[in-house]
Length: 258
Image (cartoon, rainbow, N blue to C red):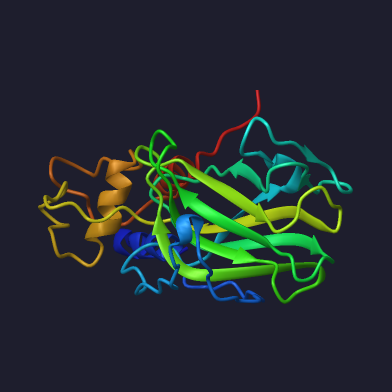
């Protein structure tokens, strides 16, 4: 069997980390509306990142995870996993996302048969204490009566779990009615490869500016590789099946059950 060179192996790993297959998404995009406090929200279409993966990973928050924003308010189930408020108009829910990931998709799932009343869903970045919130994106049930889903994307917001707390805020146009229900929400994010450092870990063969520099540094920082010697990665050396097993097992966190 012909053995692959290490540079070939790193190229394959880089390809896995920078997967170029895009997800086909069927979205009903709506204009962003005024957020809390009356601040207008304009679509924030940032340029594509120069590193990272392209596929989105989706986190679903079901309707039963939403609860009243104020202690004096109440909420009730409509049917199955849906919720609606009883007194105050706000329901909120937390969102847990990987540090360093890029949020790029927000969807509201709802049942709305109470035209013209709607549900507005805000994704908010509320800082480490959760006291001051900035709206990342929002969608609403406008223009889609019945049980449906509406989404928006392209706002490209980076997660910092040390400096942010993320939450969903659902603002109902009417309360105490099963004709206006939130059945869930979906937040989509993509992972990133860490930006390249200023100093090379393996300057002998993978210096700053090398085509594989960022990806080799990510492997080293994650503890997946220590190279073949002081300051040397062995970028052009062949790799054995055993060494490949170490790379994959460490990178994927593979294990066996007890």
